[in-house]
Image (cartoon, rainbow, N blue to C red; front, side, top):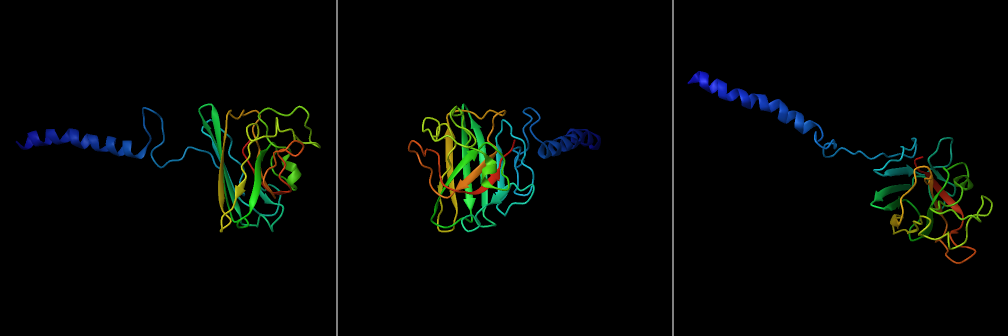
Length: 217
């Protein structure tokens, strides 16, 4: 009887390592990471942005005056104080793109314009270039950006205007009826002094560029 019990226990003991291994890794059949493991790229205010990918990207930063290599820059500390934060997520969803913005530490009860731009942040707000447009306005140039509402509109550009609460925090979401082209991707988020205008001749304008957050290449 003793010998028989030993034989029966052996398969149970052999199963223990397999169970432990299954609990420590991902799904062997799907290749997915284990629960709680993030596969999405991110970037911080002082680090280089992570590359974009089909799973979407997140760029986050804490604003400070410009220094070489900065990825989150305030050009007007009175309206975007040093220490304020912004987070932008770009997420593909079927044939659309969902873009979300969350800010903290801005002036309370104020409306800010916010858009995606074509170049990374630099020493001045102008470094970010014009607005990102899915279909670029052929009449626009670096010195005369697009103000034609046929192109400068929230369907062709990415507008993320926010109105802050009593703590200076706000969120906004834009759902675009197209996907970002990796070869022609936005490179920054720019925060402006006022809500975005829509009338011909001023469409897409939102006042002075207050701050900038660099996005992945």
